[in-house]
Length: 288
Image 1 (cartoon, rainbow, N blue to C red):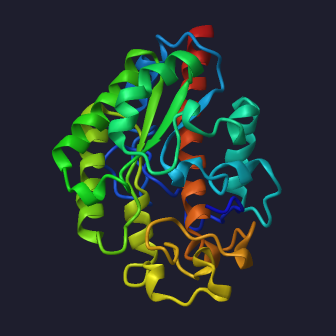
Image 2 (cartoon, rainbow, N blue to C red; image 1 turned 180 degrees about the vertical axis):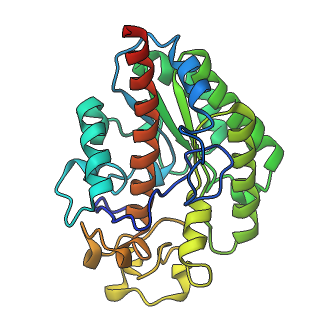
Image 3 (cartoon, rainbow, N blue to C red; image 1 turned 180 degrees about the horizontal axis):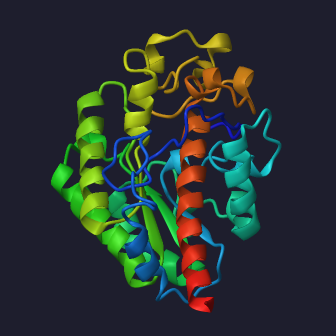
């Protein structure tokens, strides 16, 4: 997967789900997310280095088209992205932007949630992350084993919780030819987030909200034959997010509807910012 990436502009407020089980794009009506109290309780037993973020996932996570570009230039960046980025940069350890990639760090191409379940304890012992973003499922869809997927996802998230790592679970993007399965698996992720009372990024719902009818890049022309250049959120291979050069580091609303990797990165930024804000608030309370 090509490793170019870009940012996004957020329009109309918060993107992503800051309350487990809340529809994407929505904000909690309470003063803080519904999962905040539980996140503070989980973090209360954390003993590792602060500012560590693990990215557990398949090729969509391993690719440097995800997350890493935030540490680069963001133009033009709206105030909420810049504010969130400033807070995240102040806490996040530098190696967590782009260096924590590959099997040893919990992300690799063609992997499933079962792989994560088998290896998560080793990753947690080695990395000791304060927060872990978890997104598996694209490679689980062909087996259609929803029950097995959900059991394994719960096991991965609970392994994090037991070690004081706050898990953020993410729904999977829609997949060409397996759209119904992607929707069903994403619903399982929402249920897991609600039952474990942990943060959720609803990537699947956000893609459908922005491109309900034409998210599938397999039906779009790919300039130069590059599947990542399609002007919709899922690339021409029907599996991975798109990454068109035209919208490289473009934060406009237009880019949000076209750049699949940019959209996922924006959601991750805002939810992670919410998590560390909850953690920081807990620290301030202890000092009072």
